[in-house]
Image (cartoon, rainbow, N blue to C red; front, side, top):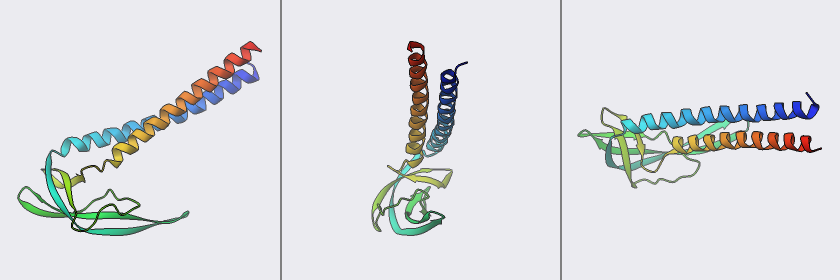
Length: 150
């Protein structure tokens, strides 16, 4: 095998392997999101009672995320829970009315309408995975065709 052929094989293999890992993670995130979505059969309106700011420290510095605490009625009782889906900017405010989707069997399993981070993250991983595979195949095939022409 020529040096060009070996390079093509290794380059394509690495990019396709990285793409496959991203695809696997993306499919896993999507499956997790869809499983949770199946459980969220009840809908109600809730009120943001507080927005908690949490500082996350890491070796690369610290960043803040904002998490709304939401009150809503579930199965005839009042529930007050902190949303686990926070954001880097404050998008919710005290007194704000929000749509809440929750599991009637377990109201602690809920999400705010329009907050589909897990779904978006899964799609991003799928897109990056497909792009990596495409790069590997296009460049690999291009180099292979170019080397045969010379």
